[in-house]
Image 1 (cartoon, one colour):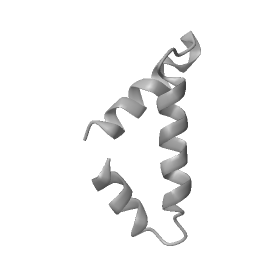
Image 2: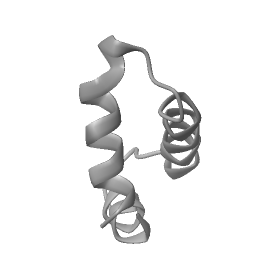
Image 3: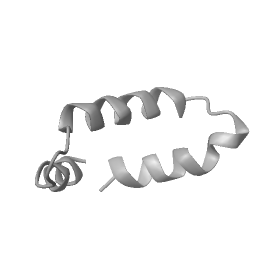
Image 4: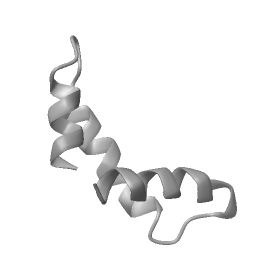
Length: 50
């Protein structure tokens, strides 16, 4: 995840703090995801497990 956030910080206008908050919220959601969130949680898992 550190690599992902480092890559984001190089983008103009990227708010790394906002992305960190998004990752945290997705992590909380994906602890017990509703069925419709399965794809989002799979993407979240791929991002944080890099």
